[in-house]
Length: 158
Image (cartoon, rainbow, N blue to C red; front, side, top):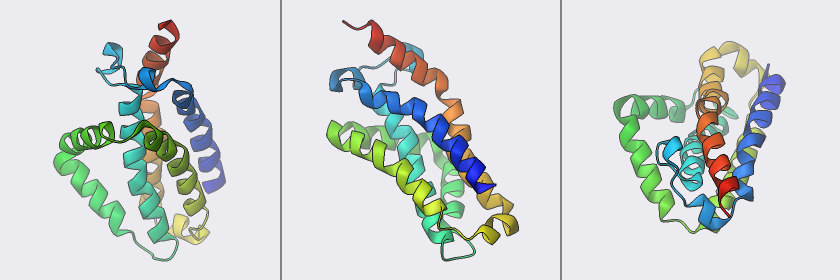
């Protein structure tokens, strides 16, 4: 189960790695067809939520339950739009090099930590697997159109 999940997650994430090939100026250009998000905004949105998945995987490597999973789900349900706005504000203030570093490091850290979670924990807690699926594969798929719009606009920029 988990090796297949990790392969699928990795394959989908590879599409988003194309953002790392954009220039700094291109990454900061808002794109109308992507809800006025820039490449930086898309990276921020995906990677900031991945941070919760990294923390949860770390907890599950040694614990039966994850406080991060419960907190993240609860907070998203209560104020998801506000959190997304806070993420955008915070990441727009970061140096672009830090944005790129986090984009490269966070998904790799997630895969590494998921590999440390005991196999039995996936079988006894299906909701754990669901959390990681939602925060990765489903989330990536939700933003493929945004990615396409941002990359398409970057290709048109002389």
